[in-house]
Length: 140
Image (tube, rainbow, N blue to C red; front, side, top):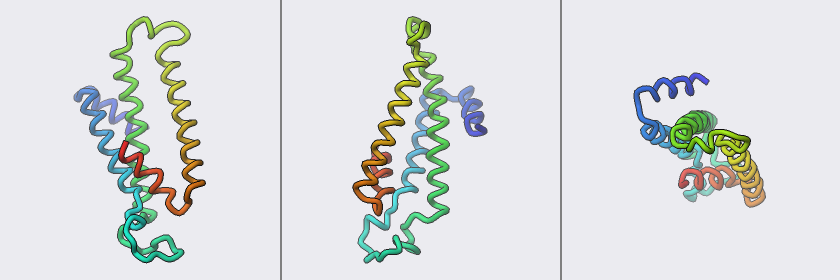
């Protein structure tokens, strides 16, 4: 919540497009921290999941990457809502099927599809789970 309050304060001084650009950059940096680069290079890994390798994702790097990506995504949702309220026609702003309901439905569908994607990737390879999740997210 404090980060969203900070973004709300910054929205008074900066355009929404600039805030979106900054938040996407922070989120991409967080996703990059979550990519296990040691799995992409052949280091003759054993069963210890590249423990001690300098390119491996350790606990500190994982927490930092997850924290940055989560915060930027949550704050980005607020900036998108602000932008949507400025560009939505008044006809869609009233009634039962208003823009808020449509945004909630799209958000719920996106979360459901994301859960299905995570489950499918888990069936492919648990060893490469982080890379199979975060490399496409970094590319998108």
